[in-house]
Every structure is written in C-alpha cells, then in structure tokens.
Amino acid sequence: MSLKFRESIKQISEYKPGTSIEDVKRTYGLTEVIKLASNENPYGCPVSLDELKEALDRSVYYPDPLNHPLYKNLSAHNSIKEKQLVLGNGSDNVLEMVALSFIEKGTDVISSEHSFSVYKHVTQLMAANYIEVPMKDFTIDLEAISKKVSQNTRVIFIANPNNPTGTACTAEQVDTFMSTIPTSVVVVIDQAYIEFAGPEYQLNNPSFIKKYPNAVITKTFSKAYGLAGFRIGYGMASSEIISIFHKVRAPFNVNQMALFAADMALTKTDFLKQTINNNSLEKTFLVSELTKLGLTVLPSQANFLCCFSNKLGRDIYNDLIKEGIIIRSLETFDIPNGIRISIGKNDQNRLFLDKYKTI
Image 1 (cartoon, helix red, strand yellow):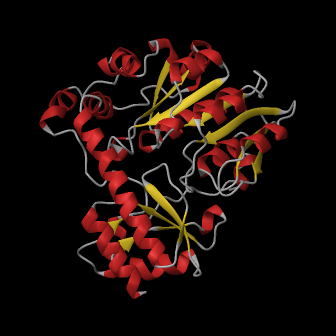
Image 2 (cartoon, rainbow, N blue to C red):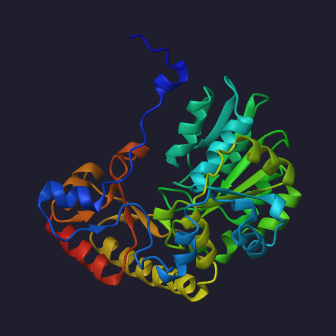
C-alpha cells in the first residue's frame, strides 16, 4: 500500500505531552507521585459533581456553545460583545483556527525562540515557514520580531507570559510593538498564564482589540481556573476575525461538560483569588530555596519557574522521576540545562526540594 501523505506532514513532530502520574506509577512501581510538570492548578477543580448534574443530563444532546449561558457570561466577564468571542477545545484549538484562517503555504509565521511548541506545529501543518527570533535575556524581543516582518508575513505568535520561561512583556511594550505591525499581519497574544501576572502586564483587552483589529487574544480555563482536563479556552478579536473562525472551527468543538464547568468556574472568584495568592507565596518560597541550591531562576509572571543548572535538564528529570517527582526538562525547547517546575502546594514544593537535594 502506498499512501500519499501531504508533504507538509513529513516535517511535523508528534506532540508529546508531559509524563502522566499513571505512567510513572506503573513504570516505577510507585504509589505516590507528584506532578509539577504541566502547570496545572494544584488546588484542584473548583466545580463540584453536583454542579455538573445539568451537564450530565444534557450530555445526550449535541452542545450548542453559541447559545449556552457561558457565551453571554464570558463576554460580560471580558467586557466584550458576544460576536467578538469564540470558544475552543482548549486555547490551542483557537490557535488552529488562526492557522486555518490566515496561514497559507509558503507564507511566513514569526514567533520567539523558546516558546510554546503549538505555534510551530500549526504553522508546519499549513506548509508555511516558521521563523524563530532570538530572545533577549530569556524574554521575548518584540523589537527584533517587528524587524523580521515582511510582505510575506501572515501571523505573529506572542506568548505573554511566555512558556516555558515565565518571563513577560509589559502592556506598554506590547502596545508599542503592535503600533509597528502592519494591519495585514495577525498578531496572537497568548494569555494562558495572564491571571498570575502583575498589573503592569495586564492589557485592557476590550480596548486593545478595538484599537488593533488585527489582534487575537487567547485565554484558557486550564491554568488558574483548574479545568485542564475539561479542555476549554477562548479567543477574543474583532467581529470580522471571529466570523472567519466560526467558518473553520469544527462543529460542536466544545463539549457539554466543559461548557457548564467553565460557566461555573467564572463564579468561583474566591477560588481564583486564593489560587493566585497561593501561587505568589509559593513562588517566593521556591525562588529563595532554589537559589540557595545554586540554581539560576528566571523572574516568572506565571505559575511555574524556569531554572538553569550545571546539570542537563534531562538528567535532573530522570533522577527525580524515580523518586516520584515529575518536572519538565527543557531540552525540547532548546534549553538543555533548563528545567521547568510548576508551582505546587507547600507540601509538594517542600517534598520536591527534599528530593532535589538527594540527586
């Protein structure tokens, strides 16, 4: 059999998520495993099973995101119109919509080095050219990215705060950057971790997408809201861009459970505040302790820390995983001596530090 795959598929690497707790338990015969690898919320899911009963009752029916209360509530939460909002099966689903809408074969897509791998994935899927711009002190260099824009540029992806470094550009810097970009180029501001960032990094999103009709802002319920397993995120943009997204998105792309869970999560303001506050406290603690251990820790505006050691990241990962601690080696991000540590609860962070001292 001789199957004729698309040529662009040949250059794409399979996305490999972080190691799961179940996999580590099975492989190493462990009963207790702590995962500090994928930047999930260590304080759990804010929505109870009882609160999802209606979703279970309605699961026999196809979901209708556009007419679900979440659409109206999420629009109000972000002070935008419903026609400026699209829901996705995770915010990476919205990134796929961007690719399907704007990226054509042979065109250019620009992003930073050491950034979210899905940007490259969706670019290669469309047989386009992915251009990585070097960072400046492990922070996205917006000025350098601006200088790379050409007539062939279609999309720019900016993760702010950036994954895996945790560094961020201020709202003022982003605004200045946008003023230099032609309106024919779509700029995606990925705000997956924005809830954890300081006030100087917070864009006024409604004003921003009004001022820059070529901007797309993506957000997720996976991190601060604790709904990673439900797979739901969203995009905000001009009504013109959103109308195109509705043409390319898959039908019923967000399931009933995710719709109801996200709608309920929006009401859990105390949970969100506590998550952010705990993250800040534990981040301060971890930075101090890791620095004492000789690691270099980048300033983070997210719920994880990017650290550099005199050892290879994969060696640290391999040593810790045998002890039931899962972190992320940054070798795949071209940072061979780097590791990324999700900020956990205090007992989890202390156990990680204790295990780290033994390797």
